[in-house]
Length: 254
Ligand SMILES: NC(=O)c1ccc[n+]([C@@H]2O[C@H](COP(=O)([O-])OP(=O)(O)OC[C@H]3O[C@@H](n4cnc5c(N)ncnc54)[C@H](O)[C@@H]3O)[C@@H](O)[C@H]2O)c1
Image (cartoon, rainbow, N blue to C red; front, side, top):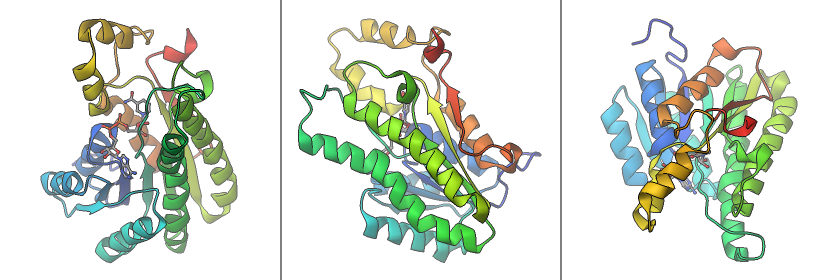
């Protein structure tokens, strides 16, 4: 266990915790001694991750866009640990398309998961946090929220909304001792990209394109985002609220 105890004994819900950035975050929090609720639409993956990480972690199946499922997730966390100190709103996905090409149903689904999912999770977690003296919420946004990229209109809109919602929630819940911050990753080599590589006509060219987005000439690693989420979740970032921490290898500055 870490000597720093950044989130030691804190109860943390991590949505999208079965894969990629969420799984790396769960792993880091477990090393720090947190009590974890790994929540994911991939229920089997969440349960397997919880078993693997040990320390009493539980895995819960949830679609963050469905209020009843989110309420059940919160109830499971409270039943297991009695409180919730940290909420990492990380579940999300993306797809290609412009406003001309995206189907309405696909737009609705993405906004429901990426943006409404944060609303729902926060809506049902905040009363529990507040009852126990406060807590810390970290939302996973994206560097595309402020700079945008081509052919990802729904995704960019959802991530822009997350930045704005982060600030709104920070204002509304400061008096309850709840801090709300956002991490804005660059292009991170998570399983999200596996399908893209598998389908690419020229995977090497795709790799070069993705690596080339960052000033640092490479994709980021899920661990590198997890470290930022850990810091924002912990009391070490005690004066940060309503902020966005960009972890993008310099992608957005050139
Ligand atoms: N990988 C990147 O380059 C990158 C960059 C910026 C932001 N992000 C964001 O980081 C977050 C994690 O992405 P990742 O790259 O680790 O992807 P990932 O696909 O590896 O992990 C996402 C996880 O979210 C889960 N999930 C999807 N829909 C869900 C739902 N409705 N309810 C609950 N869980 C759901 C998936 O099952 C999966 O386990 C996402 O919000 C993504 O938009 C990723």
